[in-house]
Amino acid sequence: MLEKILLLLITIALSSCSIFNAGTVHLKYSDIDAGIEGNKYELKEKLGNVSASIRQVEHPKGLRTWDYLVKLSPSLHFDRFNFEPISSVNTNLKYRRLSALGNLKVGFFTPIGQFVFTAGFGGGIYSLDDGHGLDTIKTREIRKFDLAYNVFLSDRVFLMMGPRYYKTAFEQYTFIFRIGYFWGDVP
Image (tube, rainbow, N blue to C red; front, side):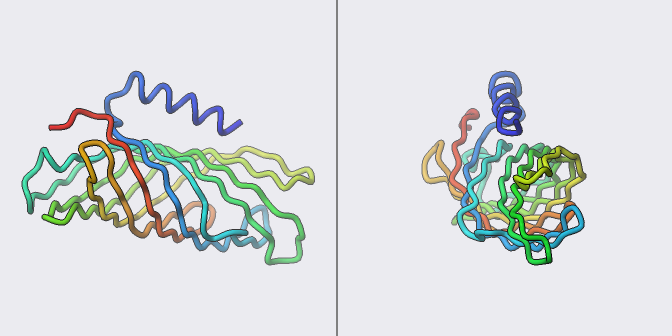
């Protein structure tokens, strides 16, 4: 269900909204200890959580070296986690989240790439499924802080990497390696 909503939003964003100019696919190392539905869980696999984002990225060709930029920008994210219990409950939990955030970004452009600090706030819709009767969809506010190093490998392909912290119903610490494609106008 959440995957279908994500595909619909991606289609709308790409076809009608020029705010978004790039998309990324992520490989994450995450460390999450979560209290969900009154039980304690941890990630089943900490490495290998693949997810995707649609975002706004500043192309370095439009800026000079040592420039900086402060701006507001939106982002859409889709995350999938599989949790295993660390408390008395013995069922695994599938967690899927689609979120939209407004972000305050401060970027510094250097000869070796961009360094971007982001603070974001928004909301998410997530589903929980334990395979034994719990199958629910809920909403929650989300806070995000991250530091990213961005470098363009060509006019369209770029890499982003760095740590990220999410605060929702639980805390999420993640180091993310992203490969992205810039579809906006190259300055």
